[in-house]
Image (cartoon, rainbow, N blue to C red):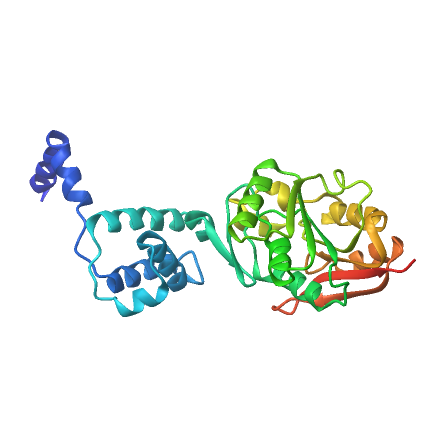
Length: 304
């Protein structure tokens, strides 16, 4: 056995090109076989392993999920398998699938995403749902603070074509990303601008302001699972309430009479955010639970 081991080492050291070719040679695989193998590997890092594997393969082949179902016995080319295996390796290092494929669904739209901003999440769709349920003027003026990818602003703009939506974002790279999403979705009623909260909005008033600001405490253990996403979009001082407090305090100067402010916040922050809203002069203060049963958004109306 020792001689076999030595001979193997000798081949590796004297013929690296041959060894590398043997090591990286791809086996013939069907689409269905690759999905099963990738799903088993991803199960160690993702509760949605099968879905994640399907997204990676669809992205590489530029096909729909239905194609994978109907062509499961089709063979993967060596080039495609090597490329999708590289994507898989990134996912196995816990890199979010959204960043790997560069696009992610939100509400009834699809957005380009990048590491300069957060990945849109289903919980934030509650903010869109609440906004669309409000009784607002037909041509309402709406502001989305800290828009990131433009998710909330563009979902509202695409579903209410007569609304005039402003998407404000501090980070210049995220501003460009949101502008690109607005252009691709042909959301001509959405204006994206660079603004540190209200800094570039002097003299403007809105019928509705929405925001998903940073609200996680710096020592929150959940941050470990979010290390690929920008900390500046996640973490806030004062037990996660600093940015929420700033928006509540400043928003009345930018709202029409009877205008609404709705904010996303942490699962344990509803009481604190309600108190911030009341202190800022808002009435009809209330909170809504997300799809997991946690208090996720709070808001109120400004009655002058």
